[in-house]
Length: 114
Length: 112
Image (cartoon, rainbow over all chains, first blue to last red; front, side):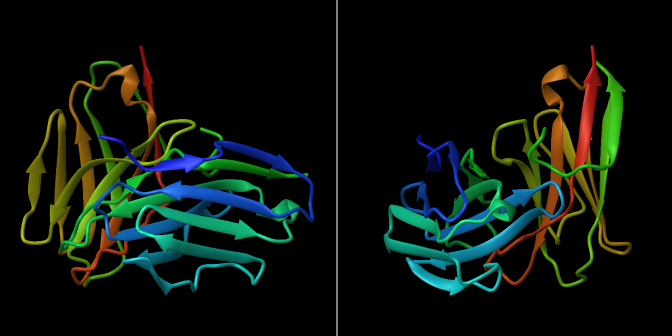
């Protein structure tokens, strides 16, 4: 079975540029999560969707961050403009709607803002 | 791995030994708990879960113990192998719609 697929795996860009991270969740999963992982703060939940609808975006650090889920099989996390402090590994995860199910993570996008 | 926090608690064991990784959780209302394994350059991978109506659950070479009285969770790995070297996270959730809270993680190093 295909797992959660993220692209790109690595992204290096200059500050001020727009960055778009992409995620394809596992087919049939109703929840989609975006996380950021850094040395200082560990794994942080940024936003999650249920049935393509954003439910909680309180973890999104600033207005420079936005996320969309136009359909059940695709989501994007966009940073515009990017800053060096946005450098991190960004993970997407998905899970089933049923009660108490584990999340399945992609292998992440390693983002470096120069 | 470089994607996880510096100054993580670290457990070093010899190959073949049993490992015990501990986790203290904070929310007494949490009723679902999960252990994840994260290898360098990869995302967290589900290992085993347990619900609050149980105090022990076993998988292949792994056992999770839950002590709700002291809000403590542990992961036991039998006959630890070099491939078990990774960062291990516990996560807790409550209320059915599972939006977990992740711990900081423990780095397990297995020496051949």
